[in-house]
Length: 479
Ligand SMILES: Cc1ncc(COP(=O)(O)O)c(C=O)c1O
Ligand SMILES: N[C@@H](CCCC[NH3+])C(=O)O
Image (tube, rainbow, N blue to C red):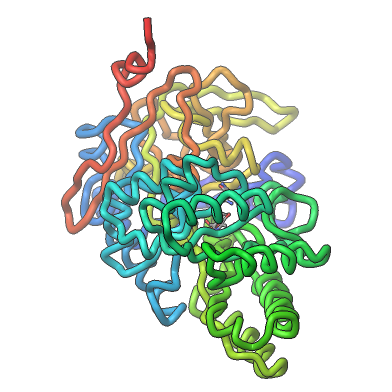
């Protein structure tokens, strides 16, 4: 049993437990895997060891080493299917490749009939390597290079999402030179303050993305596109931010985009709306990183957004556009965990009666920068055995901080969590919901090799990306 009393004095007694919540009071609670946080096919077997899609985490660590990203393939594909259903057409769901992409994942997305949002030549290259249908690719970015625009036009991508006046001129010239008419969308900054971390909010006025609606830039961008014979305007795009839990921001964005459609019809005539038939409201659908996160189900959020658009259009007597979206995190995030091996454990006194346990693992900010960058919270559990090792007795929950092995004191993987006092070097920890923006934002800081990525399914495992080696690093050296 836990020695700490949980109760109203929690904050007073555990002033440093901000992200950890109340201390668990039994070993079952210490070991609990909340279904909404962990990949769908994860469970702790009677021997105390966690299985993901029927695969023992110890076997994964033995076979591939740690740190290791483990993707529950069925979970990933199920979320693709759920978004496809919610948007009523898989092609209207553009999986945001920035969350996580490798060739095999691009194939899964293609197989599910979804479209793909890429925002760099590299992401496009992986998509093409996977033979992703180019007509289902949308190319994003506020500073696409000339080479990237050429690459996109040559590949025959479905749409380019325009983000600046310079780009309109550049793309028009490239498309003309290639003798094609390139379908485009105009990215509109709708002036919404999304309720999320400042660094991942993208539709307030003072930031780098899109054309401002309020200033008239969006209407001017449309004029310039319509004046070009090599560009065809097929839609308007808005993305308000990421890890969003309520529909308010999306609703305001949808209303404002519909308002712009009405203005455009007035200026350019109703025929414009025959071709400008898609409103893409971007990604941003939030997920449960911890038990305290309660995002609405995708269908609920999307139905609400679609209803708003329909009503607004009916009110303005406009044809109802098709609503597209770009979920990244919500598809890739929840079905993946990162496995780490515990290296060293250190207790640090914080004051009278207060201590923090530093648990060092064999990865860190090089495989998960989100904690350092956004103060992100994660759920972390001992997974290679039960806390009490099958011997019911006294197991205490200890306020712990899981840190990496980098030369940086901000190298924190999980700021606050309750881990068992039985935790020892060699144990395996898993951090949940690391499928989005962890591997894709990974670095080689301190020459740490990027981890391997494996997919698990029906009791089987297979490598998707191998671990980097020193040879990979040497390959860049020219002397
Ligand atoms: C234009 C655009 N679309 C889609 C996404 C994906 O966002 P999320 O992973 O939060 O769904 C992003 C990232 O925030 C984005 O910038
Ligand atoms: N990388 C961010 C989200 C930004 C997504 C791209 N606009 C995250 O980890 O939450």
